[in-house]
Length: 364
Image 1: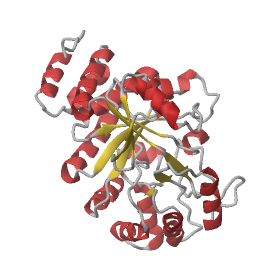
Image 2 (image 1 turned 180 degrees about the vertical axis):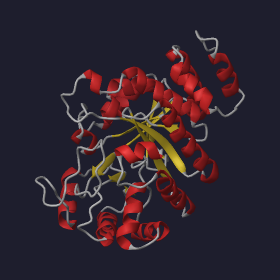
Image 3 (image 1 turned 90 degrees about the vertical axis):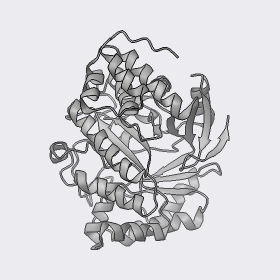
Image 4 (image 1 turned 120 degrees about the horizontal axis):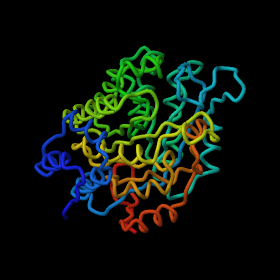
């Protein structure tokens, strides 16, 4: 398939890609700067087609946020509450089961659990959450607790991060979500998430998880104070860890959501930036199988476009999602399986319903 590039300087990058050479930070910066966005898209699409063909994956999943009480003060969060603040909550096992039972259907393959860093409850609370779900819903996998939460649990329990992960695995943990990464540079973290795991601690949590046999997820929260270079540093750090462990299944670029649903267009990432960032992720992260277009943050129509910009996964049905919505996401909180299938098919792709580990449940 011939690629039409209007920017001749992209040709050397295209040659590197077709020779299977790794792109450098300089290459990445040029991909951010070139006016030929469709050229970048075509290169990303070519890489994705080689890895995944026309297959586009989705999962039927349920979000659970067991507590919104949090010690951290992150600059992008509209979800957290302090102990005793209005709207603060912590589900006990009865409330947890009631929440799930109301939303459960037999096709749900995965619980996605992320909560606040709540110092009011012991580490055992977080273990019990997993045990409870595993006992009552043994067929759904548990994707729980970010790398930042693993570091937090280590502090409140006195265990090492390895000890924390071993206990979580014993309780039934199947995989770690990709959150808490934000941007993996210390300049960014000092300003935006000063109370959370450092760059090295987040990477270490995932490396330990990989070495214990878990396959995990990785995100990047872009669109605030980070530079383009910091986005590329973030990708490079993930790429280096993936070289060592091959433990990441997917990379998920997340567009920063403004504080309010009513925020104007200037307060949101642009469609151009969203598409370019997805495509560059596909080109830089040569050792990742999948790049996910997260429809919650960029909307269903851009998600459909993303399928020709290098994405091979569009996330899931998501019975309810609170964190992006607390920060001003415009999308609905859930989508039906039929809608996801339509979204993929009408982009000329093959919908594949998957489980957490990209095993095929059904091809549509």
